[in-house]
Amino acid sequence: MRVLYRCNWCLLLILCCLVMTAALNIWPTNTWAADGHLGLDGDGVLEKMAAQFSLARDLTGTVTVSIQKGELDLELIGDLMVRDWEHLRLDYMVGDSHLPTTIITDGEMVAYYLPDSIKPRITHDPTQLGFPLVIDLVFAALSQLAQSGQGYLVGENEYLGREVYMVEIRPPEAATKIWENTVFWVDAKSWLPLRVTGLGTPYASIEYRAIELEEDPDGEIIGLSAEVAEIGSESVVMVMNLSRFNENTWFPHQVCVRGTRLVIVQEFSDLQFNVVLPDELFYVEEFEVLRSAFAKGAAFLASRNYEAAAKEFEKIVSIDPYNIGAHSNLGCAYVGCGDEAGAIAEFEQVIMLAPEEPLGYNNLAYIYIDSGIYLEKAVDMAEKAVALSPGNGAFRDTLGWAYYQQGDYDSAIVELTKAVELMGEDDRPWDRALVHYHLGRAYASQARWIKAEEHLNKALDLDPSLTAARDELKRIEKQSKVGA
Image (cartoon, rainbow, N blue to C red):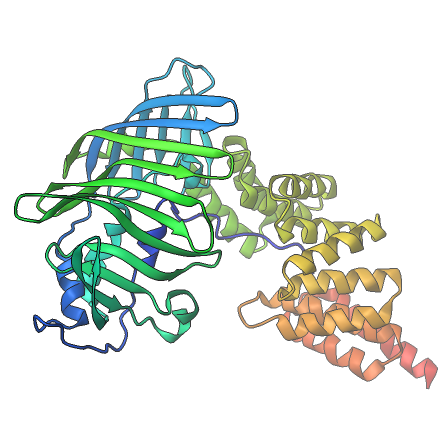
């Protein structure tokens, strides 16, 4: 398959410590309810729980981060500003010239400013901020529960000496493998979740549990310590100490995250909520330039204006040399321009930056195949791409075409037939046309003329400009007559 390019290069803001946030993000579904002794059903308990919290969207404060990794023992102090959850700015008070003085993210990109530098280094994974930023933690999604309020009251129990309601969440069928049997243990007086069991993620089963409570004279909970632990593991993933800052705003004073060889302790102080933060504090010119250039470049690629696309993606990699999607698309643009050496260099860069991603292997394999060089290496790369993404029809096509170039026509037909089956209406018509062209060539190599003509004609239906298919049809027409 001709080289593929990426359009969706923006990564979501997935902050490491917000494991529980995702767990509480409940979709509307049919609800079952049972009455508690106060006449509450599952919906009522969830609504009361959600009413205790508001999202601290706009806040400022001081954050102290201690990082221990092997012999490394580092402490950083910074001014923290958060607006609308997605926008974050940290201004560190550090003297080390190798550490950034300012970090800004909009939830998709991160800009790191080093001392005495006006141009930032850009990355595309906000989890690389250097520590897991915690914002409202477990309580971040409870406002959504107030709206959806879906739950089933399965009973009453006691936890840490307090009466709790046990409310089971009933997820939609599509999410049952992850959220099935999730139960909130909700305090019957303060309406706080003291425990959450039955949580699943694609990687592990986890449990949230309060381990220590602070109460006022009226028995209301005003602070708690809690931990998030992986089921079946002796180690605790996270410990947090939370306090109520006003009527319905909770935030951590301290969070400790433990990995195999890494301990991060994060402490917050001088916190102020619902403050007004101006746009210019979060503005990064490079973000706007990169978004505009990527959108233009992708549009030029889609319309096969390869020279214009190359200019846009060259602009991106000059600003953002670690942008995998831009390097991949620049390689595709070079292919369209006939710059084979440039394309090879870009796809090699993709593999270096993302060795576990199949796209670089597929694209570099295709260049080698199309050029008739390094065929054995091309087959290895194409096989690796298929192994990493076996359901990708384009990768199957590259592998099938590699087998064809080696003269292994039986294997080529097997892979190319799978490629045709996997390619769908969402794929570009000229890419689908190329798969049919390759399969037609493979059938022609075995003198299976009817099958060959069928796929070559399909190729021309999808892409009338594919002259290679038309030339092949003429060739096999002559060949078949000679054979007859």
